[in-house]
Length: 151
Image (cartoon, rainbow, N blue to C red):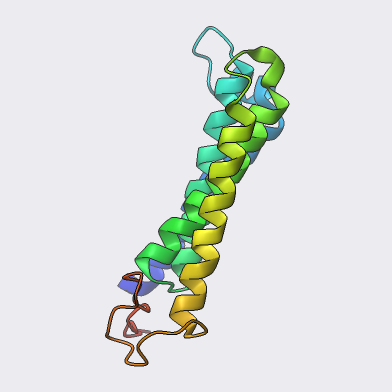
């Protein structure tokens, strides 16, 4: 097996594991706790948060396989995790935390999504900036360098 195929295979495995367990934790927290995360005491919100960040990790590998730049991968992964985390605080607002948490975390999620969209625009050249692909853009975002393919 070539190194490229190995990396892709492990990446797909990681996507399945991270996103799969993340979705399980987020959508069925009691089942996730009973079957996998049997560390007492059960805390629905904590399991939801674990799901949110596992989903974000899976998203990071998905977009990395698309050969996006590092900052773009990081921003999209953080955006996915932050959006699901905000949803976690919205649906669990009756379990504790601060009454401002859903609003604060939703605002942070929106900021992260906007930054991810702007990073994509900067890389595609749809915003004003250098036309040389090796020069940093005004925000310091560079397009991903082409990666040699080994088959």
